[in-house]
Amino acid sequence: MSPSPLPPLLAPLLSAEGQALLADLRDHDPAGELALATRLRREHPAELVSAALTQARLRQRGAAKFGARDASRMYFTPNGIEQATRGSVAAYRADRLRALAPELRITDLCCGIGGDAIELARAGFAVTAVDLDPLTCEIAAENLRNLAPAAPAATVTRADVLEYDLTGSRTLFIDPARRGGRGRIFDPEAYSPPLSWAVDAVRRAGAGAVKIAPGIPHELIPDDFEAEWISDGGDVKEAVLWHGGTPGSVTPGSRRATLLTAGTATPPAAGAVGAPGTDGAPSVRTLTGRGLPDPAVRGTGRFLYEPDGAVIRAHLVAEVAEELDGGLLDETIAYITADELRSTPYATAYEITDELPFGLKKLKALLREREVGVLTVKKRGSAVEPEELRRRLKLKGPHASTVFLTRVAGAPTMLLGHPAKK
Image 1: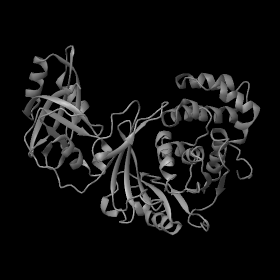
Image 2 (image 1 turned 45 degrees about the horizontal axis):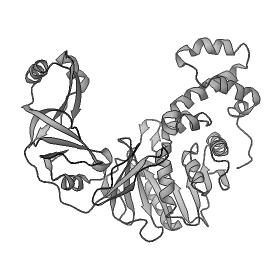
Image 3 (image 1 turned 180 degrees about the vertical axis):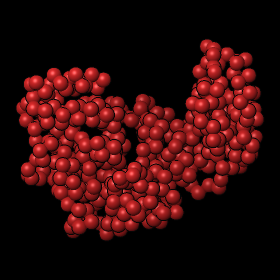
Image 4 (image 1 turned 90 degrees about the vertical axis):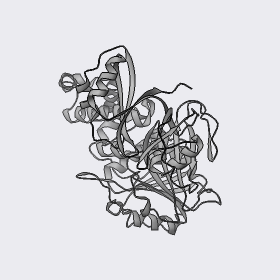
């Protein structure tokens, strides 16, 4: 790691006193933090207590992304934890990068707190991590020391990636900053660095990946890159542009949806690849686009399928509809309807019991008749707010149900049902 001096915020935490304080705060309750801080300041410097409490809070937040064990040994900044990749996604991406970099050397630009660099190092890469912020660099170096101590050499360098000398770098991973002072940045050319710069850098290196926002318009994706949308546990986490590598590792111009899920997975469906996870690792299912036309619109069948967000973002609803022998409820809505129940990892199935024109009174009367006290509200193509709807319905009863507020062939419609039993 780079030997530059530690910033004042991190250095005290690495002292024996700081480490003991962090250990004591590992399971602290944020609700009682004021009284706790008052007590601790009688025994420790106020600045150290403040820094330790901040790290304790961030570590608790970090457990959702990195797991409690890893997060308890990491250091964070508020921005760093916000922009960091979830550990399971970073591990999947690191494994795929091995096909792009058989020499197992990679340059990680905009490394942040080191979440991606950690998984790259664990996957056997010699990592050169680069970031501009000095505190972030020191944190990344410390996180690598703590979480990947037996990995090949990892170097953290403070530099502006736009000026960093990439001579000799054959494989790049770039995670441009997509947040600014006013929140998320939606224009890829407003990323830091801009998407066009990142794409050109990967081309010049020969191989690599660029992390982007999942909402990127498809027309902005370069033709010589493969685009992949990744969801973890049903939540879309990111999109990645892939380029280069060994033959067959990347398919330029293709679109993929990859789903990471815990537990044992079903065998891959037609047109999909993947293998079930072992030893707690998530299972991986990947659906690749085949250029199918949009599915036909048809009447409501017995079952409704809600595609995973990665499938929708990748524009692969047609591939799933074909697998299910289904069609769309509406040409602008990503709900698939079918007459038969079929198992698929790419969509959640619901059995539909009722179809009604949109109307609060009709819905309220039906739910009262069915004694529904718990209602799950799902919507696409509707302006109704779920919490407001529940408040107005005043539900009572022992049963549960799901209502879909959507459009069927252009008409506002309510579909009542429940998760299908397989």
